[in-house]
Length: 80
Image (cartoon, rainbow, N blue to C red):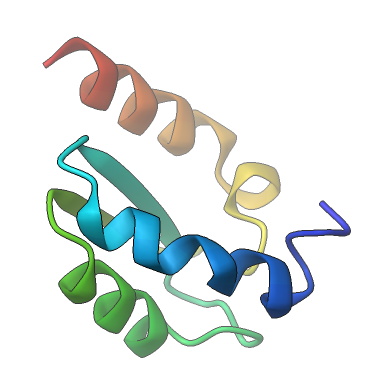
């Protein structure tokens, strides 16, 4: 988690993600005050084969504020 908090590390992955044909799931809390949903929309638009799922009522760490919704979203993604 600490490494992911520093964009120097996460942004290094962008070129590989842009080239990847692997389906990707981006889960974002709609109430994230730290990273706005617009950032997620841009990120998803730049990455082919990316599905963006917005979690209503969830904040920056949606796994804490909406664990049930996250679990269902992951199950749906991996079983489709």
